[in-house]
Image (cartoon, rainbow, N blue to C red; front, side, top):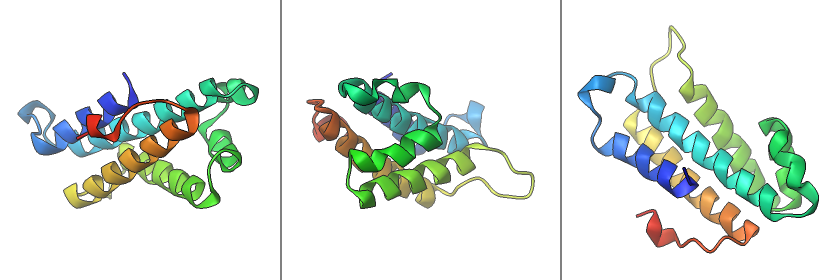
Length: 131
């Protein structure tokens, strides 16, 4: 799936959670958003000649190297968002799942970052496809 399709699926879970996934839809939406971020970064590495092998590195390494291709503020936001989504994806016995407000904010941030990553990779996808 493309990053846009993954974000659309995450937003779909937010708007109409299925009764079969009651209780797990917040983590599922976070996972889809994280996968969209990962897919956009994979597109970035695939579009560049030198760092083509970056997609086989750990995500931590990819996030550290992102500062060479995006401005430092955007790279920091990507690292923070990835960490927040990763934490939200995992079940912790004494913690609540992320709230709808938290997920909405993260999905909006993910959509912005995916757009910036696609622009850096030269991808010609429009932001209107996400709406």
